[in-house]
Image (tube, rainbow, N blue to C red; front, side, top):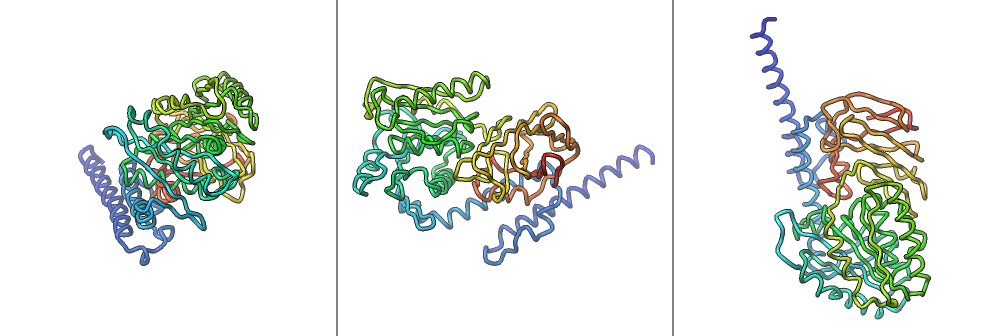
Length: 416
């Protein structure tokens, strides 16, 4: 074949490829525009598993993210307007106000958890009302949506029961849709019983937060392991002796100091123990501007993921089947953009999923997968609409939409 014929053949193939892949996007659009009750399951449709180019994957992410937002609006827009969310048998009233000019990159969101705990509803109602305007003077000099939520129950662990994670997931998604919040600028704080919850929620949902701060709480059995990429503030009065809050805050500082020393550049933290009791006289308000200096990296190159007793099946670019999750089970992995590889450093589960996008690795080239430095796979991996759909389904976070997902089985082989 001469050079002219070769050029024509390459042009023909590129047109054919463009036609075929445009057909996939066309099929996706038709599926999205089909009423929900008439849609076939996307898993059953051939176009959902066909290979995509980088450009087509980015298009599919945009379409599927908008579709997910439409689902959220259908389910929760009326509740958002009424300022009361519902999940299963629980209800979560909330209040929010807006401060400052909206940046071109989207607003910040600060979620604030009230104190109280195991007390009559009237006590927690009062604490919720107090939390709504607790930091108004500080917020007047900042930008963002300040959202105070009312815990659905009146138990001692009102802020770290399992349904709280579901409510926070709804709040984040709805704030992105309704208030143009940037999902990489979401922060969470909590005072007293809210601080107890914060100690638990910050690590177990660490992939959602840009930074977090705990005020006047105690950690219970919480672990700091998952805070590798999530800055964590601690504010406890040095005279706050109830439940050993002051000494536990010092212990957490020592633990975080050690983690940061062993992992330079990770485990950023800021600990303050002012000369006060449980009420810190708003000395803790410095946490808000401190947090806002940070932005979330949704796909950090190194992740430590340890399960709490409230299980999560995904954490940034890692996933594991729910049936295989074990309490305190730990997975640690790192990707290297230059060498185009992922190295699993620690893994308790017989199956884990590695999710990838084109900001992490060059998916047009062979990707290497290793377990503790030993190569278990090297080859080209495909992008698909189904992978994007599945990774958007729960969190609806466009930054956590992954066109490539593979399973690693027994740390020895991979399955697409």
